[in-house]
Image: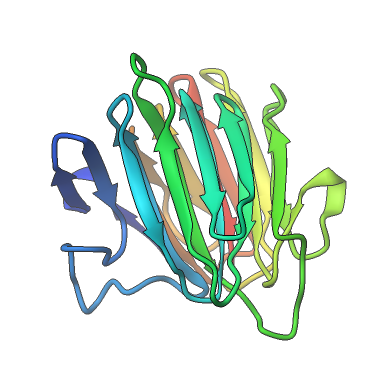
Length: 231
């Protein structure tokens, strides 16, 4: 099954200092049918105004993956650790019980645009509290995995996160490890085909729930950036 969820169907927020689109229930946006998908709890696309910040808060036991699309962010925790991430960085924070975390757009000119995922962590697993990598220019790269394969970030869960950066007309076929997956278009239009079901078309900001597919072929109809989250 491949089921499209368009950008217009997602939750929306515009607080002036923050503009956001929520795939699943988050903050003021609540849908009891969309509390997450398998171990993927949050998938937000957010823009913070210059100088804006999220105040310190605690989190459940999750790995938080931030993909910086534009701008520069500073992250702090209540232990006094500080880390900056800029355009093209992928940052993984393994939240810890008792710690609070904050985030700030440190530019007074440029908005901070990023995608944020919360991935439910297995309590029996451990990983580094902070990990980062810089996106490559390859058409396909593995961003995160359970064992840190191919230099990817290591997760506390059986999840594989792929990044696609395709020119118009290019395609990639990926093998799925889990029974479910979620495909998110960052920008661009694509045709998505599975072995068992007819194709779906995604455009900028759209996503797709994928179930019971072993292979997924993604063909870019325009220049495309996308995330495939293999659950």
